[in-house]
Length: 78
Image 1 (tube, rainbow, N blue to C red):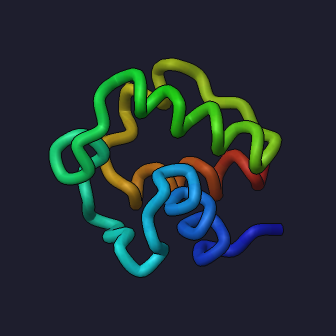
Image 2 (cartoon, rainbow, N blue to C red; image 1 turned 45 degrees about the vertical axis):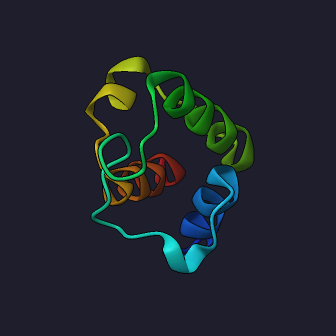
């Protein structure tokens, strides 16, 4: 089972950022400046890393890093 730090490390790795630069309250689009294609790439990368699947509705509702961490944690419990 993955913990929150490992999930944040994976997000940071996917975004090519140091984990220390990941703010849980950061908006994927507004704060990190990700466009829709980059968000889709992030979800794809994390899907492969954690061997989970996201549906498009979940992706569209995910606005912050914290939302993404919680979504991954929920998926890992399924």
